[in-house]
Image (cartoon, rainbow, N blue to C red; front, top):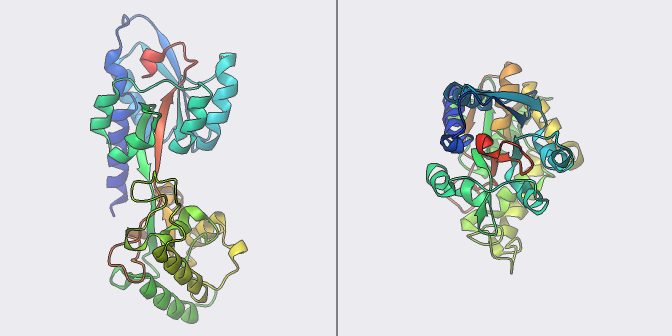
Length: 313
């Protein structure tokens, strides 16, 4: 995968969606407006900042003030800062905070929702819809894949199945004491849900809305999770010691050949000097397709407390 291309695609998505309602601006050009935008990752993400530059070039009367508020903290902070008049006009948050944001009355519905839905992935607009109303503007869809260290495993050695991954890892571990053929956070359901997805099995059914059953006790899910237990022979580390931070650190240190993680680790791994690639998840036993994964939608939301909702949207 070309990581620069990936970031470029996300940048285009940001420019299209974050300020999708900008054309609704009808205020005079000399009406100066300052918008406060909350973003994470040590300030504004690269593509959010670029989107802001494109927006202010079109609307020179608007200035954007970026403030560092971490993605997972924004929903709680806007509920406190918004009513006090010191919150953001626009802020980044994950889609799984939508219920909290709407219930608290912290966000406004999406402007031109039908147009936005046509411009983004269906999964993104669905993720941002609550009780039939869409909120926010999708910036990116995030999931995870198989990251691999090119110095430790060749592209033609990459496993197509989990059985192949286990077999390769055992050989690698034996030949490279202190290193790992693969590593992942084995105690985090966000990742281990992989092993319940064989033969099209999905959490809460194909559409994800069947609350009559979780489908985690289906024959395919049980078979997959039983196989998951056998991976201990290829990654002989206690589950309690395999947290996300530990797995990330091992890959960044060059001691793991393969790692299950997502695009949020691209910059940290590049900064660590790791020459890595990204491949599809291996197929589960009895399945020919790459294993399925959870995905998340990162979005920008217009605060219901903003004095400039039209400009923010």
